[in-house]
Image (cartoon, rainbow, N blue to C red; front, side, top):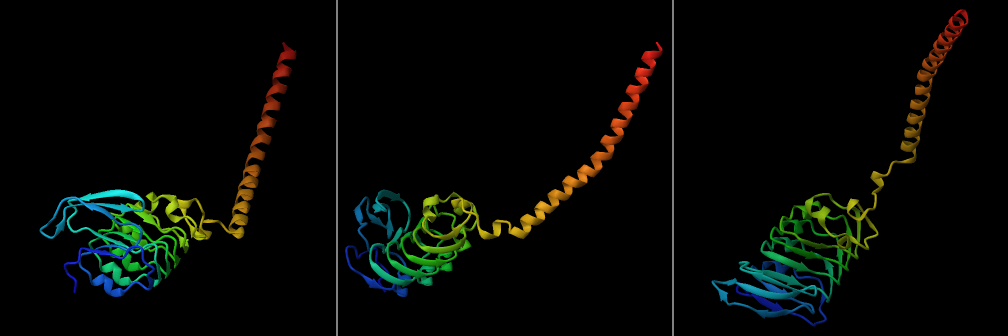
Length: 238
């Protein structure tokens, strides 16, 4: 069905409802369903491959030349709601996915970690909750990640991709924590009991050191005084 579909423009609409799961059955597509739109094509469609394309993506022009089959799915700026279909993870050729500024709820689908070709993933300004899947850090081509302005919680996974993501990509998720946003997670903060135990350990070390040093200092003082008395007596004798 629609196996030759290259461009589907649904921009400037008032779409509502959920994202159709059948969308994942489109083998090759370049979709724009927001105010972003394709400025112009450069080159020709040769051997069913898009040779050169200039697009507006998140208010910046990007050229993707000689990229083979280029796939852009942009559903931002509509009234689409519901959860992210796990079937979107089947779009192996997808390079840029923007489903921001809607009412998408639920968790970030674990299968989005299967988007091996994804370069930009924007799910910001939604109602997503739960954890950020660790599988997203395994996306080797991912350069832009934006999960800001949601209701995500938990510790941001550590890894090469997550650790280099701009802090703004995580902002306004009141439940998130991690080194990437300089917020300590509860498990990284020692409890009051642990702090008391640490204080007791330090106190024990202090007193143990005192008991060791006191005898040494005492006998050193006695020896020093004895030496001085002997020296004084010898001086008087001379």
